Length: 225
Length: 355
Image (tube, rainbow over all chains, first blue to last red; front, side, top):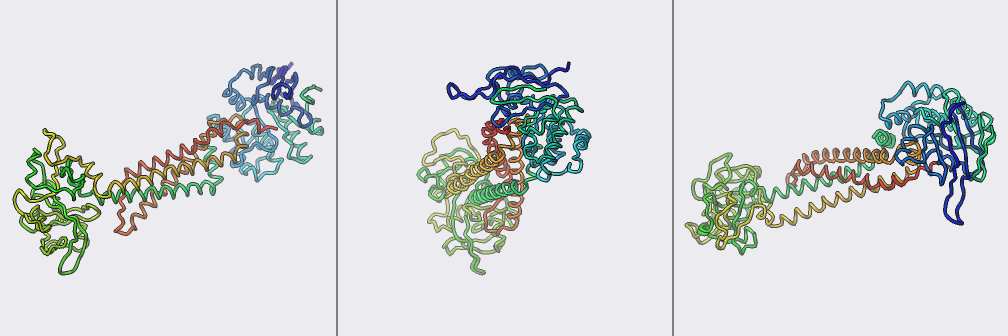
């Protein structure tokens, strides 16, 4: 049996107090293994984003435990969680998490600068080649198509060799063929690189490539294999 | 650093605009500093050349040389052999032959006193009615051997030598002996101990006696502060310079703050990815320091360039020490200006970047 990379146990998250309190997540349980591509699907306002922010250590749950590689994230300091996000989590955000004033290659260079190591040029070029981005390696994000941008974001998320990749509606700004392409690539990366990839989406059509699907509605999560 | 510099490179226009504003501020700072220094020099150069430490004036003279009336005999109140008498006459230096006219500050002292400037052409004063002129006057057409008048008197003196450029009260100086100056002043007494003078100057700063009769002891710094108009002039220019530092701080602070507000979403995304407040602040700091360095550097270069083509009448003198200090102050304003956005950056919640 493979081990869980990221595990959320009995997560409750409430906003506000007393009779104005809103429950965003109620006793949510979740786990993802290495090499697994997991989708979390639900309508807007169902608690998807709250789930993602808690899994990423951006918010602390009202109760419950977040375990990354068996370590409790919920007990770490702000600074430790910043380092955790930098080293252990790759992000793919809704529109694009690329930095507008850096070329595609420089986006990767920045990661190495922040990690205080020399630029891993061959690793960058290999990743770009894998995602069919070699032709645009010196382009700025605004010179790329939406699909290219999200592929760069996938490469950027993989680059730091994280334990888990969190993708927040990565196809929100793409048309259907491009969406399917991006999701297929995510599935490929999960299986080839043995990465745990979690994708949050509201689009039913995209889940056919996923190994595991969690449905979330009104803060309740249910798993369907 | 990398982040900050890459952004500047990509947004060249935006950042060069602020660099341009800083250049203008730096330019005004350096121009004012040069003028302040030039005016200061114009007022005090002669005093600085004395290399004296103490000046004695009449205690009722309100610390002003021209208002101080003493006689040579008052020297008895000061013990010390390096005391030199000093008289001053401000008047028009003119020639009868070719009608040159220049306002000059004439000083009279004893022929062998340390106040007498070192002659670079001609000879020292060795007789009556002889005059030494500053090199500044030589440039205006006065020369050794010429007979000149000072003030309204009809008496003439002969130029016998010149010395290095020297000014007092924004006028070039001339030196003569005490009795010649008294003759030029049409003073009734032009010989002996009862001759009027204005001050005693000495290199000694320590004296055994604390009381000096009708004399008041001033340090050379106090004497300079009390030169007519000197303090007011310096204070005005320096206040303008200090205020420019505040303006530089405000300009950089507001610019960086507005850019920070514009980039909140981007900074949120960076924080999500584990690039924290300290890295973002480092980027802002590197940007503002680079902009300031460019602005200051160009400002200095333009100032030095302008100094070459300035009309000779403009009292502008470059003072590298002051320029260095003011450059550092502008750089400091840039650093503080960037740091003003710290709180805003720290408060950006990465959660806004998700969902």
